Image (cartoon, rainbow, N blue to C red; front, side, top):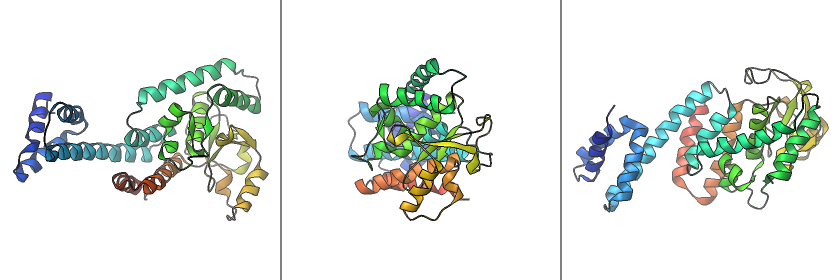
Length: 293
């Protein structure tokens, strides 16, 4: 492992006109990885270098961050213990200005308020009512219908900051709060929409990705995008018929965590295509490849 002085010395060589020296320096910085980023950013901020130097710093910083998420997200896909971990990996990559500490602290505060209002003898519907009161009456979370396809609506951190998001980001918040409350609520990957379900299963958090769910395991459905409105199985049937989709058991039962993060990437990809952000679109394509068998 190189120390700070060694890394700084390498960074200072990035303006060398000899392309062979540059490639050698770049290779060594990429090998060091994430520890280089603060030094690269410091050099870029403190020095008035030409466009070539700045472009090289930007390119290496981007490549290091991309390599990091590709490695970490691949590991998560193979062992997706908690949904929030995979979500945060994607979110921190595309929206780095909202820190992991901020996200964790915001959720902690919400969970604390809900916990103070819950009692053990409450029914599932009563518990959901408490969650809805805190999320939608006190914190004012809502679905953003006006700018539905905005990339920020797919960001979990931006949801916590702006109190608005799309069906998926609102549902992820509901799932994570339920996990910390030890309530059996998981995601339902409907076409054109995403909701959650309250399950008749007590030990959901032990290993949520190895359950074999049936429709009978679902007590009722919840639509976080519409302020936690309760839905029945018939409502799901009607919705599927309305959008002319072939009936499938998958749409009535909880989906794996990796299906949720993949849908998050799909939503972001659509948003970045609309803004013609080619770099982010290319990054998403590379992350998408991790999901192939």
